[in-house]
Image (cartoon, rainbow, N blue to C red; front, side, top):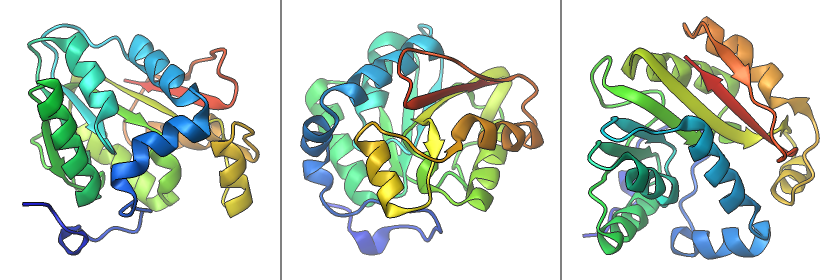
Length: 212
C-alpha cells in the first residue's frame, strides 16, 4: 500500500511530495551529472567502513543510502525523509537493487532511534530546505543518535539563498548568497560537535561539512 501525503508528519521544513517518481530523472536532466559526482565525493569523504551503522537524513529516493550500503556491506543502513512519496520510491529502488535498507518516514527534528545508535550520519542537499531553527533542532538530534566518536557528513549548496531565484541558480550550479559553511559551523558547535570542518573540493558550488 502506498503511503500518502496525508500520512506525512508535520514539519516547518520544505517537503517534496509531488513528482517523487520523476525526481531521479529530473535530477539527472537538470544537473548534467553534478549531483552524481558530488554524491560520490560525499561518500568518499564520509568513508563508511564495512560493518558500520549509518543513517541518511533527508534520504529522498534513497540513492545515497543504497550507494552507502554497497560500501558498508554487512553494516546497517537506515534512511529517513519527511515525504512518504519519496520513502515509497526509496523502498522500491532498494528492493529492486537487493539492498537491505530500513527506509522510514521521519523528521530530522525527531529522529526515531535511541541515543548513540550510529557510527555515521549523512545528509545530501537537505539542509537548505530547513529554516535555521529546524537546522538547530536537527543537529541536536543528529548529535544525540551518533555514537561517541561518530561523525556527521553533509553536502549542500555552497551558498545559502532565501530567494526562489537564488535557489534556482544554486540548482543550476551558480550558487549565490551567504556561505553555507559559515552559517552551519556555529550551529553544529552549539549542538555539541567539537570538530567541525568545511572540506574544500573541486566542486566549488557545493559545501562539504564534516563534524564529530
